[in-house]
Image 1: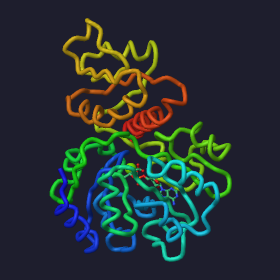
Image 2: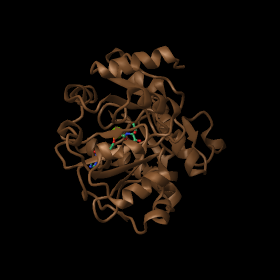
Image 3: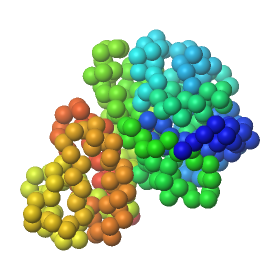
Image 4: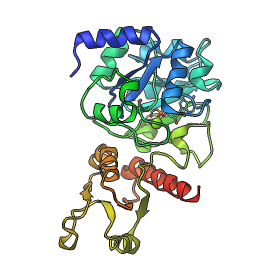
Length: 320
Ligand code: TXA
Ligand code: MG
């Protein structure tokens, strides 16, 4: 675990323009000083992320908002007051001086105050914004433990603060607050929860809204082809002996000995474990990962979104 000396080392590294991976309650982030363009460029290089995709700036507290957002939309302030610290990112007009390297040249910036105590301690000691995407290579499954981050980057990112497994396990909800409120990415803060605070929030259609890599159709994919199937198609796919399975129930007797993970019927639990389960199933040498479609209700929206994108990414690779 991380002690004060390691935190000090992480803060010095950030000031020196180096990268630090750190836990948040959603997923681990790959952080850089958001005021240092060269450091931010290093994040893109490490991830293999195409240039122009904006990064989220993480803050210790909402009191820093005015240094990053101007003018601050009233709805953004209400959402920040209600949900920060927490798994919600707000897209707002950027303040003067916010780097193009961070915003991808856009006039907006994504801001979030994370709830993880170690992220908070790091941000507070650092004293300014930390730009951080999820700490995975571009297009791959986000890391929810320090070990996952080391799997992704190895010695290239030596400083990984270990805060244990992330409590949420899926990336933050993203809401654009530029005029009409627009959901760009579903997450643990649900649309009904948002709407209770600010009124109607529209779900962005595919390809609508600003460019966001987490909102590309093909994203969040394991290396093994993933198929998301419901009903009879799921049952039929189970007959393939070399399939690894992620379902919402235990394997029946006929499937004993199979690579089968029961993610359970609780959406929060299922989401918490999802990326670790996909990484696990990815290492079983299976020909395909067969995932049982999840329920259609709002509580499963974030999980459904990530699974749909993972399946789409595999389809895209089949075509490539
Ligand atoms: O939970 C999370 O949000 C994690 C943790 C580390 O905070 N971070 C994360 O970052 O998922 P990333 O970069 O993997 O996904 C952030 C998404 C990207 O799709 C990015 O394009 C979008 O947020 N984004 C950032 N700034 C934006 C902006 N100004 N306008 C539109 N989208 C933006
Ligand atoms: Mg990501």
